Amino acid sequence: MARVCFLTWKRTSVWNNVSHSVRRTKRTFFPNLFWKNIADPITWVKVRVKLSAKAIKTLKKEWIL
Image (tube, rainbow, N blue to C red; front, side, top):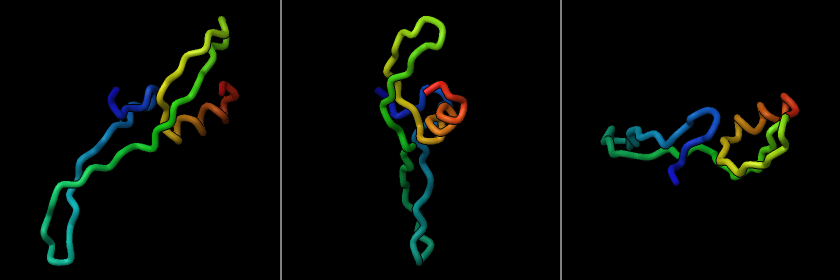
């Protein structure tokens, strides 16, 4: 499965790593992802999804998680 957040769609990004001599090489930045079990508030069916840390904080603030 890809490294993508289920809610925020954060994904792996590719940028340049710049050395002291300003030489550029490719570098990947991975999102801060975790597996979480989320329950649907109406039916209480639990689903296991990959969420970013920012999405988990937002869900905790909204009392869904």
